[in-house]
Image (cartoon, rainbow, N blue to C red):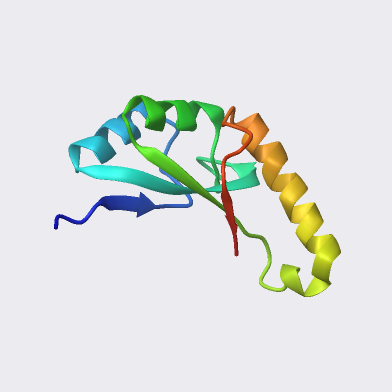
Length: 105
């Protein structure tokens, strides 16, 4: 069985999303793990609409995760609700399907 290869990255050197997606595709990558947070790439961690569109156009699947400080989960239910709302707002801002799953870390 041939493994499916992908990437997980938080920042990029620039915002040439088409070039990044083409390079990932040329390297045989099939998926990318990206943050759905407020600070947007390339200077921040969060995926943008342009980046998402470039990855999808290159047939690279995207999965999302949401993370902030190391102790955010210690605030319980209210913290989880706020994290979910923030993630959904970022999914909407990145023009992704509203039902896009998110891993919370």
